[in-house]
Structure formats: C-alpha cells, structure tokens
Length: 353
Image 1: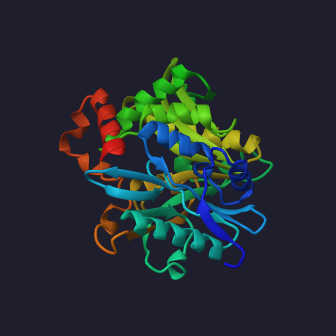
Image 2: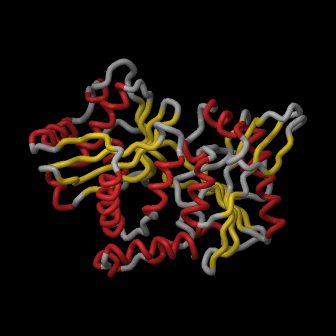
Image 3: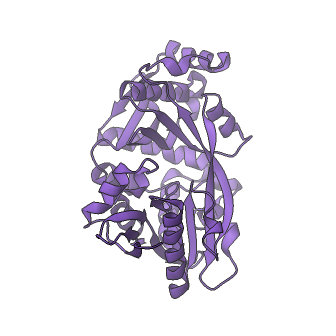
C-alpha cells in the first residue's frame, strides 16, 4: 500500500501501539502491549511484533507475533499462542494483508512455520503463500443497551429454570480482586482442564495478566456456596466487550447450576457498565458446549487460522489449532493425574514443546 511501511515494533516502549489498539473497534485485549510481556515472562516466547506506519510515523496497523522453538513444534511464529487469538489489526483489509505478508516474509527468512489466528476473513486472497483454515467459531451475545436485565427476555424456559435454580440453592456470584480468590479459581481451573483432557495454562500467566494489563481489563468473577468458591471465570473488558477467557467449576456443585449463576451475574454487571456484548469464547457448532453458549442467545462468529511453512511445505494444517502440540498429551489416564502434575505438564507443553 502506498505510504505505509511494515516494520518491527516494540509495543512495550512505543505508546502509539496501545493508543491505536484502544481506538480500534475490532481490538481485543490480546492486541494490547502487555501481552508481549505476559507471554515472554510466562512462557519465554520472544516478541516479534510488527506495525504499519504512515509517512508521518503514525501507527496504522499492528500484528502481535511471538517466536518459539521446541522439539515438537519446531521453529514457529504465531499470533498468538496460549490465548484465543491475535491476528492483524489495521485500518483496512489491504493494510491487514500487508502485515500478514510481512510476517510471511519473516517466517521464510527464519525458516519458521507461521500461524496467525484471527476473525479477519479473506486475507488469503491478498497474501499469496498462506492457507486459511476455519477454526471453531466464537459465540457472541449482543446485550440490550440501557437495560441490565433485558437479556433475560426471550431466553428459553430451560435456561431460566437453571438460573432460578442457582438463585434458589444459595449460590452467590461476585467480582473479586483478591489473590486468594484467584488461587481458588485456579485450583478449580486445573480440575476443569483435567476433566476436558486439556493442558492448563500457567498460574503465572493469570497473575501477570492481572498485574500488567491496563486497569479494568482483567476481571475475575467467582461463585460461592456456603463461603466456598465453586465456580468462576476470568474475563477481559476492552471497548464495549466483555470476553470470557477461562472458566471453571466444581463438578460436585454442577447440580446447583453455578455456571448459570456466573454468566447471569456477568451479564447483569456488563449491562450496568454499559457494555454492548459478551464474548463466550469458542466452541464447535453442534457440540454440547456450543449449544450451551447458544441458549444464552449468543451467535457464532467465524474464526480463522492462516498458516504457512517457512520452508514452503509440510506440517502446517494439522497443528494449526493445537496448543503447539500440547493437547496431544491427553490420554485416557489424564483424568486421574494429580493436579500438581497437570501444572507441570502445562509448563513443559507451552514453554518447551
């Protein structure tokens, strides 16, 4: 594009990065500069962030990108690992494609595999050398403005029964900023991830996100019964969106509907804050998790992976949505593995594989 130049950028020292992100309607919290530090300090990923500048030096597009090397994943450039997505953020489709093309050139120079995950569709038409793979969609609920409880209307009777049961059985949902609650949530999260035969993210990541993200972005909500935390969720708030990052619950408490208590509380809170939408995160269409998100009124929004090999062929597609090979560790015995061992598996999988 005439007048725009793609170049390396260190968002940790360039205030123009976050100014651009915070003003862009499609930005997510993962585009913020803090994630460069969070991923580097949690997993030792090396930031290789890119930006577009105009003739006056102003940022007109950004692409968060990190490098990692492991015996399983090999040499890889990714936007972004560990978190749901990243991808280019720009003033136009052509500018986004220019960023992706520059990332592809960087991958070829270093012999790395490139994986870029984003909601931005159609970039393969403007960037020769990348393939698009459709990923599980995200589920997004538009919230009624000016009416914190308006989302309850037109919901299914089954969903409303679940919410009323949560209220009847004495569940209490609240926001929390305490370290103790974050640790309690993380213990539930470890158990939930083990139940799904998935590798957990590190506690250090959550702690650093709360510490380094701008004020008000990181939000923890917990659900209690009898003073004991039985469910919770980590959310991000940016612009008009509250986005679910991780949630967890105690299997022994599921009959009380703690997830209904969690989401209904967050929706009411979001309405009071004047937020416009709740992003429930991704799930396969037709899956039980996708059906659960859909019953709240959430609509599937496409997600994509753009992948290319720095050597011109090979390993790309099968690993595009896997957590850099981590999910391959799941096995029949995983549900019986002690929780401290799953924490060590997360450290090994995300940092070293």
